[in-house]
Image (cartoon, rainbow, N blue to C red):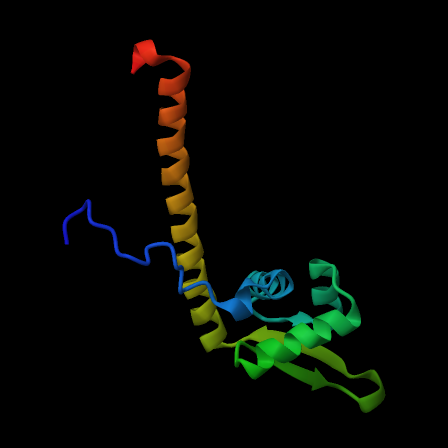
Amino acid sequence: MSKNVKPAAQFAYEGLDRVIHERARLSVLTSLMTHPAGCSFVELKQMCALTDGNLARHLQVLEEEGMVRVTKEGESGRAQTTVRMTASGRKRYFEYLEALEQVVRDAAAVKEHAGGAMQRTLNPAKA
């Protein structure tokens, strides 16, 4: 394919994983990526500014997808919940970031192109 030919669905961004793309889940996963040993439920709640119920629901979705592992350690009355990213979760997260980076590159190209067109409109003598 030549450089000037673009695929028909160039801006479909199939790699933007809908599970990750939700703001709260992206926040949770990014927090976990910066803490490879995992985080407590309380730490995650604070880092992501989520309520107990909201965080619990998003963790349930991420756990069902195999992206995080939630463990409870300690006595039943004082158990601490720890959340860790799984290997497959890290892989999906990085694939998502690659797709997001493509969105940014495409937007930057459009901005650059639009900026040049705007400059020619404002100052046609320099065109």
